Image (cartoon, rainbow, N blue to C red):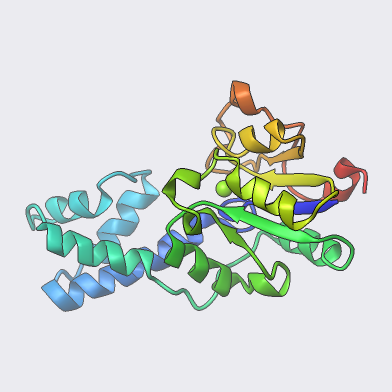
Length: 221
Ligand SMILES: [Mg+2]
């Protein structure tokens, strides 16, 4: 069986990247515009759940007015190209990957901006376990999940195999693997970003677990 993982909030908490990248944006704004408290404001708004227009709202709340498109683009690029030195795995995910990788082919399918996803993978040391991660952005924005394309590419890479997809987002992660006959496993962590989300009608997973501790038993491998 080929075991395919999602990246964000499946193998590591994506908020760890966000914290690190927002701090980098704060340092950039302090240096470029003299906004000493911008990083702290970003962290505060992010912690309160703010996601849309985060950079613009933080500037406005600090009395800096609306940012120009150029200013905003500069801060966004700083965020998306941020390279954290290290990121923390979920301990159970690292344990699962360690124990599985010598026995099964391991793969990864992840959506997101390409430099960001590559930098996350590098900070996790992912390639020692999963040497050829599939970032859907390489295929084009139209092939972000729930597109089946990345899943089909892995089926072509491992002909005749069975597949499992281990992921966390009920809205988009399980639609393609279900349609293609894969086993799908939703990791629904207690504090996960989608923990409260119901399963999507077209893509309800075969298995739901709170973490990866008993992943092999669930997959009967
Ligand atoms: Mg995810």
